[in-house]
Image (cartoon, rainbow, N blue to C red; front, side, top):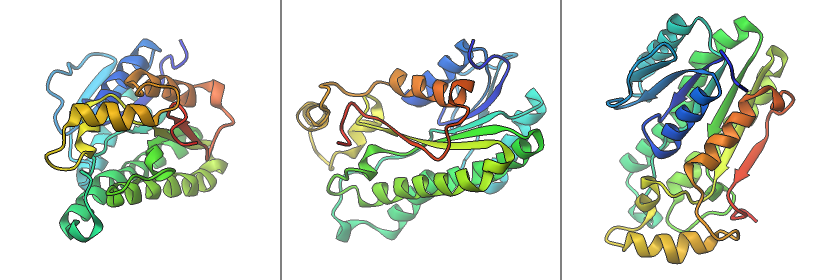
Length: 246
């Protein structure tokens, strides 16, 4: 098993990508602290610690990272999967409150979790952080202004941390998913739009390989990036997108 007895904190653990990632990491022998606003249905075991938390609250973030460390004795990796969408909205109609909410969840939360986890990794002399961004920050769509900005911030933060933390044996990478077949995809549509039609006519047809990305595509890429097979990979941005970013 590629992640045997290593400890990972996974945010957004109840979403499509997060749930599949928790499953894959457990299959690969890892211990997992699964974090989300609501963790109902995730049952604690010797290898799985579900924790409900608001990842935009710095005190709660410090607490959940500490709980993961106290439960498992170390933190080998952090996977920031939690995020929210933006319904397609012209810039002049985007409220400051909506902008700030998207930035808090998509960019500030990964900053807070990284800040909380890094001291444990430094103490160990090793660790890995993988942040989920989006192929939309490479090829934006109209109306996703705040979302694209938030994901661009995640990439810049990740690469800044990669160079800062390299001397401590901590790797930091990014995965850019393409349009994914999850509940979140429909949330990018403008208000009142036919979500099923948009999935087919816009999102699927934008992928050169002809299908939407599925959660296991992302989970498998995260297994690789967190494994010893990627021991020299840091500061990289992986487009898991079926060619959407070309």
